[in-house]
Every structure is written in C-alpha cells, then in structure tokens.
Length: 225
Length: 225
Image (cartoon, rainbow over all chains, first blue to last red; front, side, top):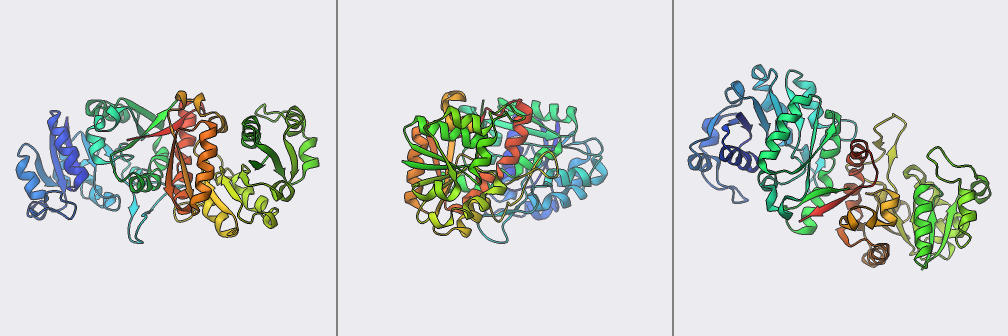
C-alpha cells in the first residue's frame, strides 16, 4: 500500500520505518522537507535528527504534506495533536476518499505536567479532523500506546493487549484493521463511529500517570473479558 | 473493620453484601432510611428494591448517612456521582480522619447517550470530594469497573486485570489496598495523589462504549507491562 506518514518525530519515524519494513511504499510528509532534512543532531530525548534518520532510511521518501498525500491510499497522522489540523489542511486537495489513520492525541503541555486535553468530553480530535475534512475517511487508532508498542506490539507482554478502532467508514476501518494485524496487533476492537474517539483520547490522562508510576512508556491496556 | 456503604443502588448493594461476607461490620447509609426500606419492588433493571434486599441481609445495618458514618473507619461512596457531595455533607461531622473510598463516577446522563462527565480534564470528582471534606482521607478506586467485578474480580478473566489507587494519604491508600486484596484484586497500582483520579474517571467514556460494543459490563482493563 502507498502510505504517507505525517510527522517527523518519534511516532512518525517509528511507524514509517516499520511500515516500510512490512513492504509498504512509505513517504514521510512534513511542512518543509528541506528544513526537516537539515536537522541532523539528536533531540533532547536522544532521537536522531530527522535528517540523519532519513539518510539511514533511503527507501522512505520525504515530501511536503500535499505531495506525500497525493498518491497515498492511507495517510497516518503522527503529528502532534495540535499540528494535525494544519498538516491536513496543507494536503486538503489530496484527501478525497483517503483513509486518515489518526494516531495523535490532543495533549496540551502549556500548563506544565500533567498535560491537559485541548478537546475532550463532548468532542475529540478525531471528530474535529473528520468534520474539517469530510472528504477523508478518518479512523482513530493506536493513540492509546507508545510508538514502540504501536509498531511492535509483541514488545509488551508478548502482544497480549488490545487496540481500538473508531470511525464512520466501515471499509476504512477494515483497511486499518488489516494494517494493525500486519503490525502484530491481535485484539482489535471496533468501538463504533468517530465519536468513540473521545473515549480513547480520554484514556491519555491515565496513560500519562501510569507512565510516571511504572517508570516506563512500554505498557498497554488489555480489555479482559 | 466497621464500614459504612453510602448508596442503596446496585453498587452499594453489591459491595455491602460482599464486605459483610468477608466479615466486616457493614451499615448502608442513605438519606432517608424509612423511604429506602419502603422500596420493595424490583427496579427497571431487575435489582431488588432496597427494602427487599435489606430483609434478605439482616446482618447489614441501614441508617442515615451521618449515623452510618459515626463509628465507621471507612466510608464507601457508592452513591451516583452527582449525589456524592450531598451524601458526604450529611455525614460531615463524622468524617474526621475517616477513609472515604470513592468508587463513583461523575456521569451526566441528562444529554442522553453517551453520558458526559460533569467534571474532567483539570479536575475530578475525587478532588472535589477531597477539597470539600479536607478532614476525610479520600481514596479513589474501583470506579473503573462494574459492581460485580469490584466485588468479585475473579468473575472476569480469572481476576487477571488491574485496579488503581489515587489519594493524598499514604496510610489510607494502604487500608484500601488491603480491602481490595481481600476482595480478590491482585494487581493494584498506586497512581499517586488525588489528582490522578482524573485519569481513572476519564476512562469512563471508553468503558461506556466498550460495554456497548462488547454487549456486557463484565470486563476490566489490565495494564500489560
């Protein structure tokens, strides 16, 4: 499948590399490719600068959002939650029928720790994206876990945990389910329409405190039933 | 331990019965005991009217909130989320140092389904209770699961799932942890101070949609790590 991954941070890098490894044709979308590629120093968390990462992944393209989305069957939104609307806006001409897999969270760090959600309760980022771009088919998924667990679910508890799907388009959800299965996710629960994105985004405040308590981001929830 | 269970609904009935079975001295607290005991017909969901339930549990006392709390070492708040502040207000003279185990959720059904949270993101019901009654030692726990799973965790997945503690008082959390262990909860994660109640309350919107999708309320989350 031709996949555009929007976002050059840890989530974008991790998912793009893994999807390419699975045989997909991957292009990373970014606002300004030249500027992204010029970043070669590691960031504060020790992630390689995007330019260095791109050099190490010559099979993965790098392009502006619109160009990356142009021929993509699926766009992964791995931008920061706040950047998602803007990123998709730059690709708006190329989203007709496109499956937008939104893995981002509307975390708002401006007030310090713990972050708040910039939208919640009666709305969600997933719904905002679907409303803003009705021509796209938004599916919220994977946002409940760390990037390393998204890309390699077996890294936690042998993969014995759950993932979720929220979206209005049944076919788009099946496409995402198939992709999740390729990644190794075994228990994928279809929650319903895009309003169910509220639930998975509102899981984040618990996720953040668990990461602090457990001293690791390598965990995931399992729905035991 | 002398325990007062506030609330005559399904959660109150289920927890009171189980705690008495474990050997605790249990009194159910309610606003108007005579009125509660007069309800003998089953409710819409088939739960016995409280009067019929009380007759079937002669070892469990029934008293007004204040009287029930008077000699209790621990008060379980199993009122509906919205009734919690009012219920504790009626027992305010008897909460000095009392451990208040808050298992309720601030669910707001007035707008229909799905319910919203009446407080979330930068506050929680747990925090509201602790602020309103600083003389009490509030511990949020068990609110992430159905009453039957609270009382008998082995009823779901053999008990292989997680419970959480949020509260400012370390000793109070240890008392609640011990109680959870008696109930059969094996993985009890201390999230930190009472502000972490936001996370476990904000889990509810996902819980509600999962209950719909799975067609059962008998499930619980496990933190796989």
